Image (cartoon, rainbow, N blue to C red; front, side, top):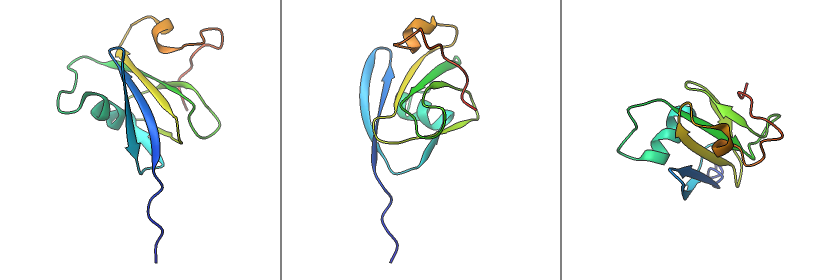
Length: 101
């Protein structure tokens, strides 16, 4: 008998509004985060996604289109239009955001 998928709660902030989602995946792609954040109304312009409290070696950084990130409980994503100030993406600007690898 297979174990049911583990549920984790993630937080996505879009346009300053936070939403919690229950996810049964070990990782999410850039495109999946955009789809969760915007639902049936995907944005026409490119967006930057900051990730905090991720699973794996890199706990925070920027998620690029076509890439994925391992998640765990309380992983947080902040979605803003591309080119927006990094101070909106990173609550702790001293550490600096880097692209997740």
